[in-house]
Image (cartoon, rainbow, N blue to C red; front, side, top):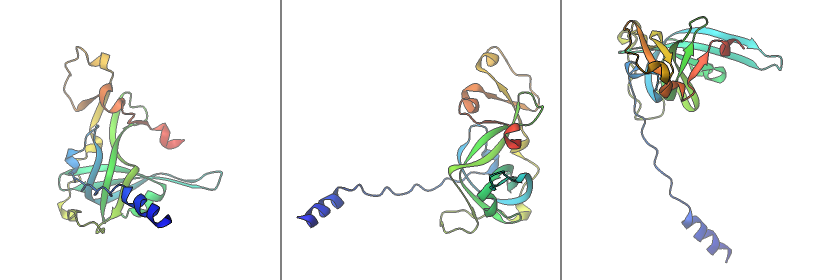
Length: 193
């Protein structure tokens, strides 16, 4: 009787769903509303923003890495244990990254793109064990000049966008209906505190 119950319970278990293959993008395709970003890029440089020991003894680290492929570059913000997985000069595989809009100090309503890793994201050195991972660009193929993290986006509410035709320049609108509503904005004070 006991084994019959186990057999019927095992038969009732749902079949495992096959994993979906990651769709890899180039850096030039990253924008304020990008989510689920997967890419392979060279780690060009690192800039430590926070490195301190908290009062409880925990170590807090925040490092911004410049990642580049043949189409451009982007800043990746890594925190704590993520920092241990990244090495300057080596290719990095980013899976399921997200974009946050960073507001530098004293910048008004200007925001810049930062690539971050959510709890579902994964960072790994290339080569990894996944056969579908594309080949990374070589260091001489990377484009460090076209940095999507330096494009300034103006944060405007929906009311400000009504009747506004835009005045050109090097700014792009990040409307309240997109990244702002998704909670993707981050102040510089978040890094300091």
